[in-house]
Length: 205
Image (cartoon, rainbow, N blue to C red; front, side):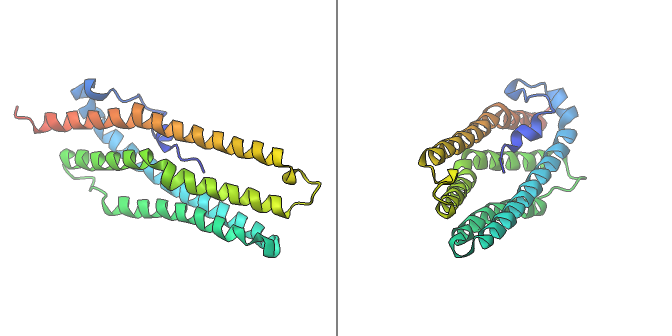
């Protein structure tokens, strides 16, 4: 699970131009962008939720196989399913707030702006609600495996464990940087584009 969905959503599109975007081009491309946003968020929520359920199932079975010493995997499964539940709730929320395809363009713009602002807040706090619980789950798995390992096995080597923890920290830091870059290069400029389009539609002609 690696939540960098804005890279996925926009990597096949032109980067948002921000406040300097051409109004006529924004108007022409809006409907397609509106549909792509809804579709990409659907894929993101379903794939993240499914990945979490699969990971929790596998790790839960692994913990059962370890017997009594596998009890920490209860916490691991709870942490992963908690993150998965968040994506399921996001999908329910998005479905309830879905705009009718026949709605006015202004209503669709306002809906997209609301969604983009929410996604920006989520990404800005991704270290708290996504990265931290999954990193904690990773540490618990490492600790449980290390405690269960034989004295001569690599998992008991403190240097190996320290190196692996540093590797996990690096991966999570990389994920955090990707999301920060998505806010800076994608979300904020796209919000500016939609605000410009909305203001143009509302201004007296």
